[in-house]
Image (cartoon, rainbow, N blue to C red; front, side, top):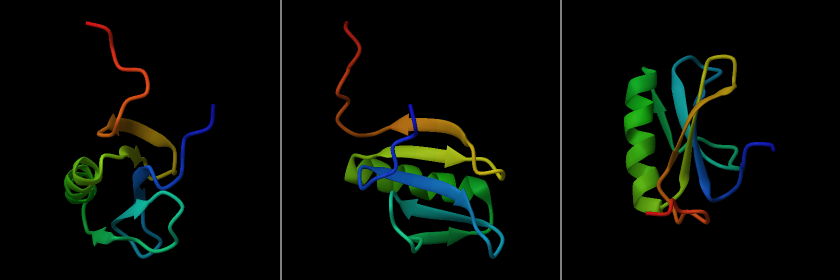
Length: 79
């Protein structure tokens, strides 16, 4: 299954200018640009929690390395 890339996601991706960008899924422009990946991840998590979206954290090669769910989980764990 392909990674979801729509308005219900935020992505931490490497920037073509160097550094890292935080982008809403499907957006062309970044909502934030950061020098370090950790700073971008911290900002992306905050935005993702506030907007209840999925956060996809990419490696330098563009592949998804980690995914955090901050939205309404359609398959919550039983407990």
